[in-house]
Image (cartoon, rainbow, N blue to C red; front, side, top):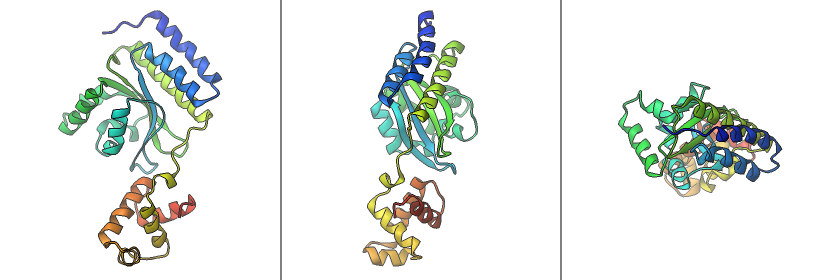
Length: 242
């Protein structure tokens, strides 16, 4: 087990005060990196994993995470299948990746975890956060030398993560606007849904198949965090993107 030098502990708590003085998001990330780097966790991010209704809606909001793994996680929509992520829906206390995996025995989870290790992430800590839009988010910290069984190490990480999220709110960190994540074709389909058109009608109007329309609408529902096509059309209208 890695021994944490006493000076690293004091430096981490000094950073909490420094975070409050940060005027920009870059300054905040620099302060967080200084604190976590001293305890073996070089990667961190504030990320949304689920929309307010519990549907997967992954987006990195702020931070400095290992770019290859962050891109793959979002691209593969791992929040939909990761039990580590799904813990966010039922608990508010911080937890490590390894402690969730230890009780699952699920080969899918082992595969995702193995891929994370290939990117140099041996373990990490999730600190759950309900974000400003009521979505399920977390400050995630990770690294190759993570020793989260150490109670001092773990407490420091959780406190730093909680303060980091608080300061992200102060500096106006927000989820990406829905208009930036819906494709033009998804917006077209929802616009016609708003006018009461069926998938067959929309297919004829747009020159695509009804099945393709259904796929566009389903993906728009996932991105907007709703369950039905009508809800998606209403949400997109309220957001001003159709």
